[in-house]
Image (cartoon, rainbow, N blue to C red; front, side):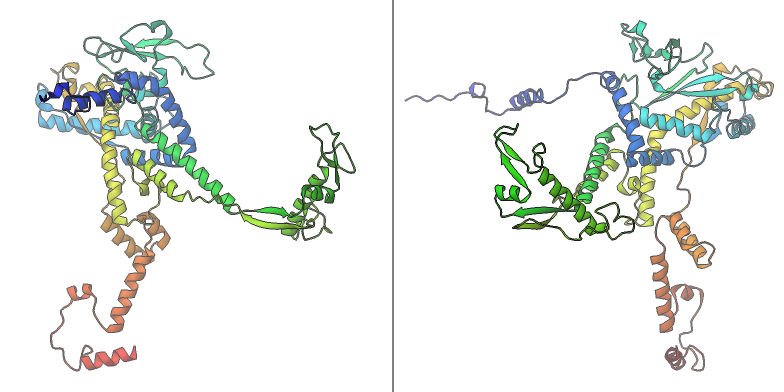
Length: 563
């Protein structure tokens, strides 16, 4: 008898090798994996729907609206960012360190006057100051995924204050209908096929989505002028290579917010049902006996198939007696529950209506709970946590509920979120501010006083980057040490400088429990005749005090008894 041993390649498909397992995984992945496309292929098609959904949720979903404001606070703060001029004088011919200090002081002074003026020079519409202007730009990035703006020169203003920035809806950057078939244009942005550099922006004269727009025309606008001055300011946070348009960083939160809203609505309906009850009328009579008691008779010749019960008084009103009985039950029930209220008896059942239900013979009433036997609160909590997690926040921050969080823990959590948000702002908002600063300085150096600041042998455009070098410091809402802040607020409360409620609102924690505990400890120390730790640090106690002193054991015991 001869036996044969098959090699692995001749065995069945069940034989596992890394190669076979990989082939099997690839074949299985074809059934669920989406097709691979470029970054623009994934983003450009989804941008309009994502943007529309986020705009709608930002107006109807409290969690998303609050999260957007919180992210803006963490990224921008309550003060305008500070721009510090730091020209690289070593790369500028004829420049010295003393010149760099003089140049920085003058430019920072002019810049501060430019952004702080009540004329709102930065905003081309003259509606918003610099801080509100940045909030508007960053909210555009959070919802639309991009910051799009145009630089303008307002000839009605002085030359140094003539730089104006016009924020536009990113939807205005769109491929014109006459240029749909060109391969180097992606959603309104024309690229260089070799390097990928932006050559032109196709910008509409009005929002293409505006229903009031009469005629939409597109203008091919270069990103820079011939001298190198920025004409189009376009910033987004990239998620992939060769990306032309941006997408909102809050897009992962759409499904979570929608689920949270559905669960919250279900929880409200469940609570409404749990607050009511239902009445079930049970009868031991037969159908014929019930109909007869209601004054109805069976007529086989009625228009309904097979005949039916009709009112004995009116054959044209099928089941009229039953309807009358139900209406009477409703009226009497309402009178029984609410008829004693002023003015309601004349509306429901009349003043002389009975205060009890008239039941048919053999009929019973059973009260049923309207509860749907489901508690949605755990699901709602999980959904809220998912909303916070999808936006890079924690539950306390996104819900505003710090009741179970200590002040130090909440401050640390907020600081970590600020660090995460600052990273995203550094990629999007900081370059946007730097470009505005560069546009202002370029215009200022065109004036006579600005020209005198530069060395005579320096060509500005040849050394532009070295001259315009700067450092941007964003505002922060966490500037004070939390321990010092809590201590100062406690002192102010004890001295009655502010109320306990005001201090609690500032610190984000109820101080009443902390102050009450301190008072209990102090009362206990006083009752026992002990000294507090702070007094022990500041005072020196003799190891063997005199018997006649107040601190003697006998005198101390007598004082304790008197107290």
